[in-house]
Length: 220
Image (cartoon, rainbow, N blue to C red; front, top):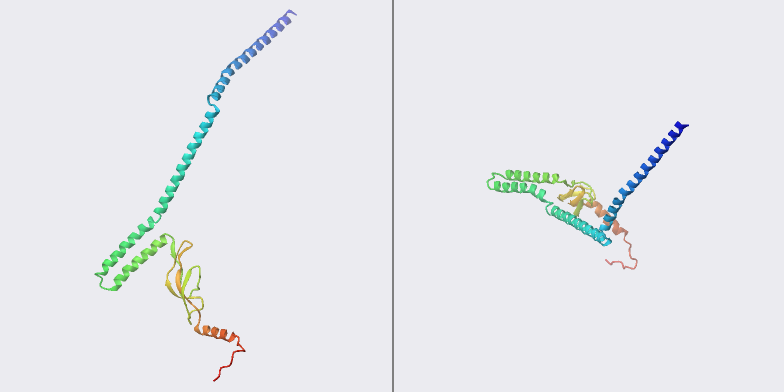
């Protein structure tokens, strides 16, 4: 029994020591939490509501100023792009201007018109190549082709026995389009059909006109 009592006393002592350790740990944790809570309270107390509002207003002003700077910069870049948009095209056309000037200078010493014609034709081909570089294509326009009001502009209409009605009988000027947008329609003269058919239609119209019964007969 003595040994059992001694063991019981040891267990009780161990439990009491464990409780003491738990109490000390709890007290230490509470002590360590007190300064942290105090620091947080100090941080919160550093800015008053008025100061917080002022800080937010300052951030808002800075953000608006930055947005205004971005808007002005974008407008300036867009203006610069529109101002110098034709610069690449003009640069390419300058070489054609030089070639035209050389053709005119050569015309003074040319032995025949054929050499001048050849020089001008070379310049024309160069200009066409520049147009193609910038996706500017001539509108397909040929004699005998059907008239298309979206691509052609009729500058006249004449009767023709060779060409059907509403077909192109002569091209006055070539039209061009940029991508799918018409820059200038082709100016053409459109056939109104055979002169005989026009006369027959006029006779038919006159025959269909009603005769006024009250109109007196002409005396011979």
